[in-house]
Length: 344
Ligand code: FE
Image 1 (tube, rainbow, N blue to C red):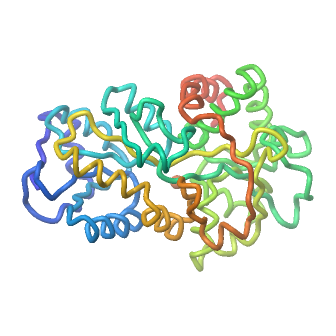
Image 2 (cartoon, rainbow, N blue to C red):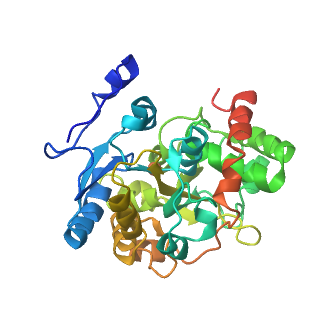
């Protein structure tokens, strides 16, 4: 596989990314499709292997934790990338804003993926769902104290909440969803109150917050649902997960905030037809089941069951406000995090 790099410092910087391309071949080939992925290989490899077995189309993957969107921008029309897999709606919306995407009109995708989890113009598609849940210390938070995101502002929680940085996409998009439902003023007061309730400065990833509960540093955290599955599957982290109860917030009203992992087709996709076949596969029962089992995410296709572990937390009401609408409040949410100095 020969990738064409833009000749500038930024592009050079990304040559250090983990590259898992198997062998030399042109960027455009009859039996290939090229994917840039922020999603980890343990998750995508089984899906792509199943696709190749079914279609005969080889999937070349470039995985990286950051820098792929910048790489795509630098490569411009010469980019070999056909599809980009990302882990939150903000990245999808930003790619549209940067004019890196192309619209796809495809019946399999629109049938299998609910409208609230895809762009109206087909510029991006959700592939898996994740709930932004609240977890609480089993021994220290009485049931009923927290039932909504708004409850996180209660004075009874002073010094008891842990979260990751407010600047992270998972937090920004949760805040954006609160803005979408409750307006900017109410949201800012709420966020300020949560800051007052923090046990420590925002730090670490979602799992680190649960670890902090297990260690008694805090009593409440906000995390993505699949991390509960990941911790339960890890002998070192299982005790963290065991120390908390799972709460799906806002069951009596708007439902729990959902985010997605998703995909977009690049503007210059050299293997467009193969990429569409892969998109259809990603939305299929086979791929949806692999995602559900391997990472405890919610299948976006409604008739595919969640993993057995996720099923033990029961069914719940999801916030159905379209993610494209929530994404329009990202900039306001980011500004708010800065205005109240949430991380400070
Ligand atoms: Fe994550």
